[in-house]
Structure formats: structure tokens, C-alpha cells
Image (tube, rainbow, N blue to C red):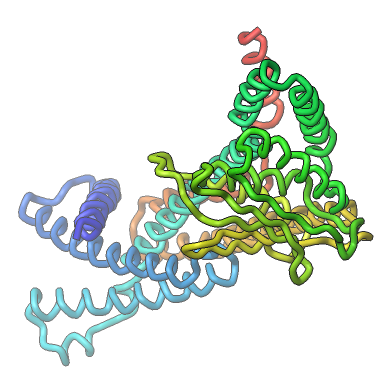
Length: 443
């Protein structure tokens, strides 16, 4: 209901704007305004036309958005939408005239059909087409701006997720807790403290060496997982029961680096680990995947998990292979199966393929923009003589056709600016100059 009221208000506003323009044209032609009674009658008729046609086209456009989600402005869909809009506009005009001529004007239906002529539809149809074109153009640019904002949010979200993932690759709490364990061991057992320090340094060395790599051998990642668990075992003593495969089917197979550490850290982070509630963590191979599973004894924490660590692993694998990261959870067990990639898996080719696909998508999107622009330009050029012809046959001395031609032309120029990524006022040079100015101010 609220949307309907908004559409009514917009339609009324558009009707007022059209009425003012038509009144000015009338004054330019006759050098006088109609009397108050005629003015009110014209205004009432004008608003009836404006509100009806606006509502028909607005709800038709809403239908197009549902029928072609995110693809309304593709050339073939735009043609279908324009054709449907023309048909609906003509039908609406017919019924508007039927109502105004018979119910209001007092004509019989037979007289209406006998006297009806296509000339009665010229001006109303033209105004409807111009308003619809403006409506489509405004929505097009509004949609583009919303798309840009959404893209920026996605970029910002991705950057934030990557940042959080790097932070979670070795949780700061783990470091603080490890240092606390180390300080206790130094007093109680200096030899264990020395071994603990050595293991801790190896863990961090592995993180620094491997975090920038795309893939690492399965054998190395599993050794690191055992080393990482040895630190947790010192911290939690016998409260963690850890098992891993003694033999690997292919030690040189590849996995994403630090994926096991993230999964092991998550198991400890989200579950109670006490001597009375032991945490059982297992790593094993299954159907070409490496599975990390643990029993569930969830902590009573008010803060919900963000899922950044798991999402990070899924995203990194998604860039490399179609094999999914499978997450399974029931009341008793939580497990994550990460794909084991073949020893000869070529990451460089995968990256090049990914970049090539991204470039193809961008190029395809650019071509779609150009197609829509050329279609828009063609319709505009074809409409110019139509406007001039209507101006001629309307027997009005005032050249009113100039206004829709000029207004629509501005829209075409704006569309061209976007399609060709060119702006005479805010181009790349302006952006670079402004960036330098802001950087200098910061300095």
C-alpha cells in the first residue's frame, strides 16, 4: 500500500510537470491562458492520463525487474520490455479515452468507435514515451550507482575478510596463552620450556614461510599440524586427545597452507577443553580429502562465531579447484573435509585461467554496455523525425519538439559517457590530481 501511494504521488508530480509544459506551449501558440474553469478541466484530464499511464508503466517495469533480475538493461530484454511497454501504453490510452468519452463526455460506445481516430493518440502516446524514457534512464543510472556501491562494499568486505583471516591464521590469544605456559614452564621445568620455545619458534617460522604460498605438500602441512598440536598439548595437558594418520597415500599431494592450523584452532576455540570434558581431534584421509573432526562440547559463549576462518579456506580452495570444502555437523561431531590436490597440480595455470575468466567477464560486461548504448542511440535517432512530424501535424507554431529532443539528447550523452568510460569533467587525470592533493594534505 505504501508503494502504491508513493507511485500515485510520483505520477501526480509528473502530471503537474507535463501540464505546465503543455500550458506553456498553449500560451506560446495562442498568446493567452484558458479561463479558470477550462484550466481545472484540463488539469483533471491531464492528471487522469498521467496517473493511469504512470502506474501501468511503473508496475510493468516492476514485473520486468522480477522477470529479468539484474538483466533488464541487456539489449534483447530491453527490446522486449520496450515492445511490451508500447503495447500496454496503447491499450491504456484506448481505455482512458473510452472512459472519458463515454462516461464523462456522454458518447455512446457505437459513436465512440465510429469517431475514433489514431490522431487522438499522437500527443498522449508521445508524452508517455518521453516520460517512460526519462524514467528508464533515471532508474538505469540509479541502478548503476547502487551497483557501484554494492561492488565497493564487496571489495571492502573481501579486504576485511582477508585481514581477519590473516589475523586468525594464528590467533593472538594462542600466542598470549603460549607465552603464559612458557613462563610457567621456565620455573617448573626448564628443559620443557626450552623444547616448548623451540616448537613455538618453528610454528611461527612455518607461518611466515608458507602463508604467502598457494599450495604446500600434504606431508609438510601434516607435520606442522602435529607440531602445532604439541604446543596445545603442553597447554591443555591430557585434556586433548589428538590422532593423525601414520601413513599418507600420497605425501607430495597438495593442500592449502595453514588450513589445518585454522581448523585445529577452531576446534579448541569453540569447545570446552577440560580434564573432565576431553576434546578428541582426529585427522584422517577419506575419498580424496583430508578430514579434521572433533567431538562437540560447545563453550557457553555470548559471542557468536563469525565463520571467517572456514570461509577463508573455502574461498582459497574455490580459486584453485571445483572440488568443494565439505562441512558436516551433527549433535556429536563437527568435521571439515578439505580437498587433496594432485602432486602435479599447476597453480600458475589456474591463476592465469582465473584472471583470464575475470577479464572475459569484464570485457563481456563492457560489450553489453556498448550494445545497450547503441540501441539507445538508434531509438533516439529514429525518434527525432517522429517528434518533428508530430510537431508539424499538430498545427502548433511553437517548436515544442525541441524540448524532448534536447532533453533526451542529454540522456544519450550521459549514457555515452558511461559506456565509453569517459568524463570531460571527472576523468582519470582529475582523479589522479585529486588523489595527489589528498595525499599531500595527509603528509
